[in-house]
Length: 522
Image 1 (cartoon, rainbow, N blue to C red):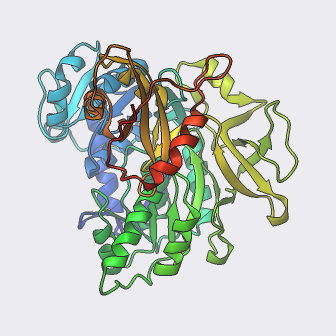
Image 2 (cartoon, rainbow, N blue to C red):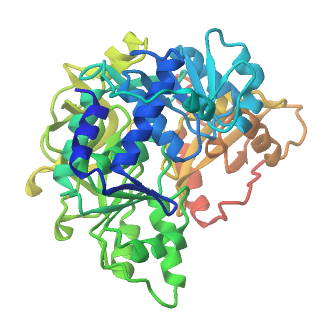
């Protein structure tokens, strides 16, 4: 089955109900799928066919949703791209994927025009104008005759989405997520979270990320519920909207919940949020203190869940508030299996820490055009997560995550891979080498921190210069917020930088420091 076909079938019984209310403008299921059919016809006119890759770099909007679901319906593969990606990053994704169509805004197109013109066989489609030699979405839609029903030419094991991710070294890898992955995992969410058509999900997440796209958007449509969608996250607006729209569900990252709690404390008159059924947190670890503070002050226990780009959702705390525990991500979703393995791939004893491994129809089919990385990611059909955790044998094998095996930094719910940032910093004149680590941050979870070694005769270099250099080539969330200068980096006998020593050395000091202050330790 094609995931868009499944969604359309679910919607057919409730065509006049509101599917999405985007910044106060309502779209019924009927109007939503009419727009999807029209957009699918436009894509077909542009020559997009099953198996083609279409990259979408758009702000959160209904256009993004129409294009995403239309692309699925015609069997093409979508690459959702972060709007913060810069020219070199976008160029890599387009070239590596072999995308035939790039969808963006006029403003973004102008900033990328030279690079886009150098990629052969790439068409550009703008949602708000016509590029040179490209296409305008509105103009193409006006030319389109009455669109017919999609024939859904691809489904099941066909790739629906390619989401780029990476380890701590090398270029990003394109995780191929299939239609069946999306269908089965979304159904599991509906079952585990008792998601009903009477629910009203407040959607404040970005759409280029699997959390906002695969979990929140697809989950809400499949449940036949209403999604109240906001263009961006604003904590005061969230509280006001919950009360005004009688929302029942909210999904966010820990940074959002931290800011929501801070906003709550400033409100002289607390809004009526008794309509809320569940607050769900993911994409980064939720601290025990935030869990407890939110419950004490707001009156709700946040439901923490666990997922990966390559798997969708893996585990969740129970929907019953009393059964949720801080520090735990609960139990596997229906259809998902979890085991904990040692470095040799053998199961550890219950309660012991090891690498979390996953099996199920939620697990992706591999990395795009990268069989070696795909093979390395699996052990006897089990996906190796790279996360370390344990299962509590005294509590039904409840899952806990204790850390990450690799050096991945999660800041504000977004992944940052140190090697990518280090490669940019090392290009700064006068820099000999660098090590990028994540230090605890109350707001963002982790703060990207660069430890920099200067060349012997480099002279003084300001931290702001390094940060500004990074911003020219990297998305803002990847850029270091703090730069620490030192004469040498700690290494082991093999010459490998011991980042764990750097983290231990600076973690306590960073917790007390202003996260906006640039440190200079020469």
